[in-house]
Length: 462
Image (cartoon, rainbow, N blue to C red):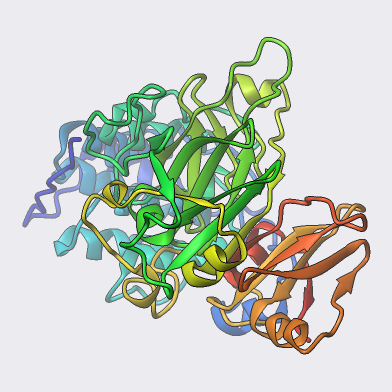
């Protein structure tokens, strides 16, 4: 990976070519007023400026190339880039703050991050940030739903693949909002299937993990969190300690192939069936891309380089998106090891060696104070890290059950239903099932994650 080391020039020389174009650039008279925002967004973020609806001038296009694309390619920042940034700022076009945000993600501290933060703030007509420049600017952009500038993907692709060339096959058109894609601080896992024993400079997925019986898993404490899965009468536990290190498992259970992503940032372990594909489609092999969408990991298929929406399970770019592939979700139960093995003594469990000697406990450490990456506005009905059990009804309506309230109600013998869905206790955790007790693919997650990927979700909170 080539991370740019930017040098801030002491002079503020303005190139004559950019100076000539500067005076001709202004906010177009036909600028549009932004659409109505929820009251809680306005209360937290204010009201956005008018948004232009027109192509970029040639001068601004040239400035984008110099300030953002060329600086990444050369890993440097000099007078030409500074002059180009002034052209971008003088345009008064808030849409261009997205490209500034993209470059800011790969700049660490120093005068340049102040300069970029101030430029983005000028375009958004807000006070310049003094700390967490990239996070605050990006939160503002997401919350206000500022449109992307013309040809945004082309510019963004050049910036991101200039840092990590292996992303080139992922940054393509599709059913994905590229504005919300950011770097998670790690590199892509592009190892072929069943070669996950090979070391990588990435978050290392596991294919076909070794397992043991519950009796032999003496390394696990009864209070340790596990993600429990049942397929065709076979049970398996995926300890959180391992999943926080690996974040992705390609496994086989109950005669079915599965891809199992865990987003540490979203508190969400999910399971998708990756067999019984349409004719001509190989089994997708899920990997971690190193990218995020609003603090949710972006997974992709290493076979076709198709990107998936991790939370929703459908392909959004590449050959699998062209086929309209939607993965069926299996129910994942978040429980503790003592309860899971007591109720399912026949369970298998991933072996301790797969944790690589690590125990991150992100929930009680790194993420204890809320999301560490930009998420924009968050539905205020619950706190951001409130645990929910999420499911989709037969009518297609998303529903989130507040986990703490549901546990109390179910343990008191109460019935919890919503449309065709009802909740059941399972080994100290909760699963949502359909009207006939069938699998509907429920899982636990943080409220901020569920509500941003299902903005129209219903909420049950007791």
